[in-house]
Image (cartoon, rainbow, N blue to C red; front, side):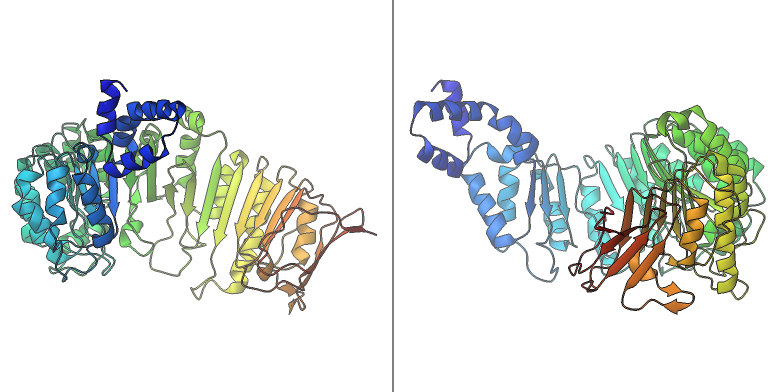
Length: 583
């Protein structure tokens, strides 16, 4: 072999080299080994040895250290260590045999160390041996409140090189963990010492004010990613009553704050933001994002707000929401939740008509979520949520109000191609089961009437008792999904009349439970849809039930009958209607 090839051979770990040499028995194999050696180092840097995952101390960590000792160059290829399960017991002494010390000697280029659990001993080791980890950019994040002191001490020891600083805690043992006020103040005052910081995650109870956020961004001019989650917790300090008042006073728009925001300097380095509405107000928060962060590639907004959070009650103005959604269309990833609005239709009309939307989405899809019909104290203001795929969801908290699902369908139905409707069982005394059942049929009639371009309709209703077959038919709907809907079989005939071009239908067997108010016995079902010619009929059921005696009869205008019987237990889907018997 040439001297170049010999150098390549010398860089292989002893175990690999010995195994390879045992297999070499002809010139062709030797030539193949030479080719492998020429490209081995590049692939090892990119894939093979870039990230090392350790799940056990004695077997994996020890063997890896032994391998490092057999090769002069292998350890230099390692970029990341993941100690996923080694630190599952924080009270147990760690590294009694000194393997970790050897890692720092053989792997001088490691930039990232992560763990799956709290690792007090590892933070201390890094703190005392920081000179051995000259290229370390990210240390393990804290998991519990008693981790914070040692984590911050270690982080400040590496403040000349760390690019990641995470102070947003979520642990498996407790829902969330709070930072004390003193630690937050110290962090904000000392952030300027982190000269290379690019990714920051920081937690403050009830979020942060815009003024604080702007101070952080000014302090860290290289920051490319900022995460400020809204965590719900029992903190050691009481909530500031002024913050609570601010949440409920957002109707009084602060002209002074909006004018001040327009004078702030844009932070052009910031590319990623995970943020929530602040106590400064909804319009103020959105305006701040649009003005100060013009170069965002990824934006996640209000992702941490729960269905019961009062921040979901904030109402944003139509002009600001419209501008914000247009701003989002120019991001690579844009996901928002719960933008409360007085006039949903006007906002969506502008959004769907924009050239930026039509360039990314060929079909207009809408989800109407009525799972918020909980009888709570929220005003009847719907809210807009948009997923990373540009799919729109409009959420309602009541059947009543200035804007309703029926009104939305009346105005926006003609442009819809796909529609997903979810209505939850009522809880409020004013919304009885009979009321919501009548409303569902009434709503479905409006969908058939107004959505003349609709191709796919998905419905999740508690029960579907009826729709009116005497109203005009809808010739555009080709696919109907009735999952999670208790169906009265008489409705199927009505649907057959209203949807003459229906080709695909899906429903769940265990929700097909009533016939004239009586339960179906023997797991026998008859689908009477004489005006429908299916391409596909799907019956989805839970795999836990035994369907050995399951029987389905389907009839159409031609009198054809389709039978499925003696199905094997665990069968979960009937994909195609295959003609087994004709009469």
